[in-house]
Amino acid sequence: MGSDRFSTAARLKAIGQEAQARVYRAAARRPMRRNRLTGRAALLALVLCSLVVVLAYPTRQYIAQRSAIADQRRQAEQAEQRVKQLREEKARWQDPAYVEAQARTYLHYVRPGETGFTLVGTAASGSLDPAAENGAADKAAANRPWYANLWDGVDHADTAAEPHH
Image (cartoon, rainbow, N blue to C red):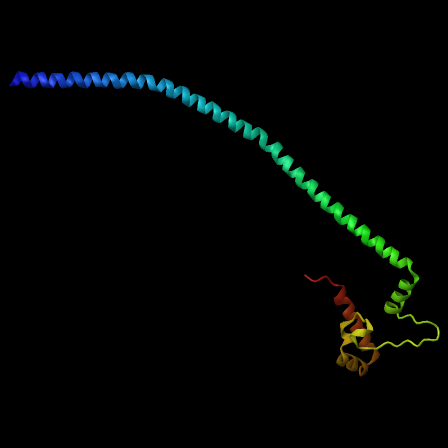
């Protein structure tokens, strides 16, 4: 039985060595192909990366220039619309009836023989001072000395001239 066991062990060892030799031979063949494919893949990846790097800046510039062109076109359209509005306004101001209506409305002009009325303390007066539109403020101002009203006017002018933060 001992020799039978030895022969089985020897046979298993021989089979193991043959299998190991086949694995080594197969492994020796594959890395060559795998190395070539890996080398090709690396070269392809390197080419693609270099193309991306080379084309990134010009592509970005192209997109930025297209955006700038679109902005310039929008600005040109806005300028054309503004010119159109100004031409229409100029044409209106060429009409004497329009000029007269504007003078009567904003400058309170009246024709000879007409009597002009200005309402104090109402929104219809066209006053720019909000305190003048308030009736209570007008009554309080009428009961104070003139120099107090003068200083209040100066104070209000100062606060209106200061920029708000």
